[in-house]
Amino acid sequence: MADRAAKLAAQEEKARREKERQEFMAAQELETLRRAFKRLDKNGDKAIDVDELLAELEFLGHSLKPSEAALTIWEVDDDADGVINWDEFRQIFFRIRDDCQAGGCEPRKLFYVIEFLMNDKNLSGSMDLDECCTLLYGRYGKAVIDEIVTEVFAGVAPDQKSVSFSTFVNIQKKAAKKISDSSSGLVLSSGRMLPQVKDLKDRLDPTLAHLFHN
Image (cartoon, rainbow, N blue to C red; front, side):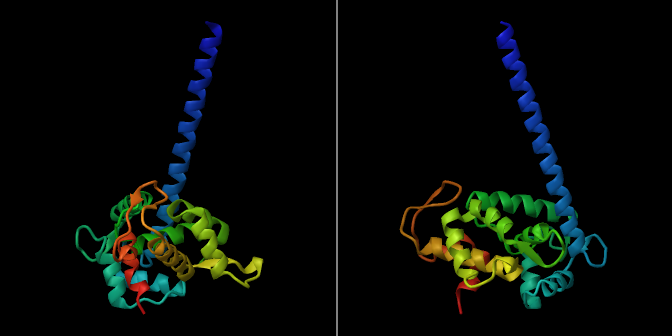
């Protein structure tokens, strides 16, 4: 009886610690997300507009037309006011992150910007390669990402292997195309089966469709 009680107490303590760990990680993630919002909110008016998005992308060395930036905002602007406030920003991130994990087709252009900024820890406009790979393994699979990263960084010295935003998008473009070109009966990282269909690359991530066409 005493052993059973001790075992139960140990299980409860383990569950309590795991809950605390999860809550701590969630709080950290939310704070990192808030910093990304503040970084995009250049004028401090608690909303992100097209000009602010373009300014950040320019800093990241990623060229985007104003019309494309406007579309990026419009795709996720639920109240259609032309800007993204904090509540929308937070909801966008968690909704699309969950959609990515499920292999869904939510618009991801702004999500990729948010995700990159959250991982640009020293505000340098680049992301650590190892962290980038770890992030994308769960989305596209380790084998796919490792092969693409080897290709993208061929001939680059180990100490220079940081990931720019354009490279971050390019790796995912290549990963989506590689999956679309593979045989039928695809298994996504989420475990969902996806049959081979025409224009699968667009269905996997329609927001990257323009990147597949010259």
